Amino acid sequence: MNTVAEKSSTGLDANIAAALAYIPIIAIVFLVIEKGSKLVKFHAVQSLGLLVAWMVIFFGLSIFGMIPVLGWATLLLWPLVGIGMFVVWLIALLKAFKGEWWKLPVIGDIAESQAANL
Image (cartoon, rainbow, N blue to C red; front, side, top):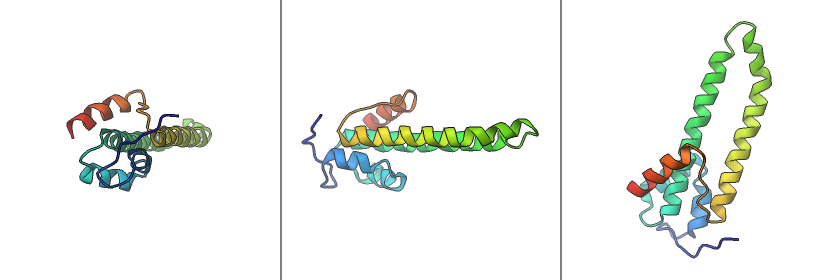
């Protein structure tokens, strides 16, 4: 297990703050107040990227669901997508709690570059 001795500028251990960043409103707060820990900034940005991805998928499925006949397929996709997104979110949260820089395929690269610039 990867132990993290680094502290966040909030006073929390960086791994705990990074895990809390997967709650979107807390991620926004950490982006504003975090000054020291790149780990916390990375996971806050990645968390918000995951939220944006979920919203894009949500709206895409909603629009696809309006198409006559083909829209019925979304009844099967909604539970699968929901479970898949929850699993990805949970893995990311647990990796953050372990203090790991676990990057999602596209979102992680964006988060890494943004965290370096913040």
